Image (cartoon, rainbow, N blue to C red):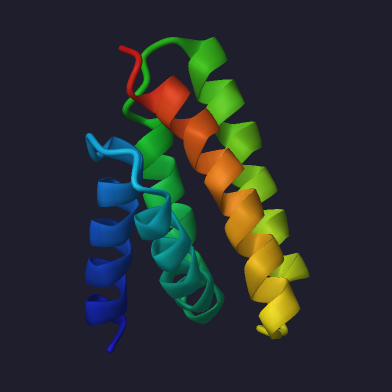
Length: 108
């Protein structure tokens, strides 16, 4: 069901980006779940990305967030075969992107 996928994806994104913790294990686990969810429901991923971008008032922050989320989308595409190696590479890239997104999205 698309509703449940969207619900889980929103919760994981929100906790990962806006959560007040620095647990790398959580980010790694979130990346595993999100990779599969983003492959299954790319439209939902795009909608969530737009909602994150829309939290920003300043145009330059919106542009940087857009570029960062585009990088994430490219990473999802590059690692869509879901091999162990691809999942690990995605997790590493996702961790770096989360830091970037947090730095932009949490600074109001």
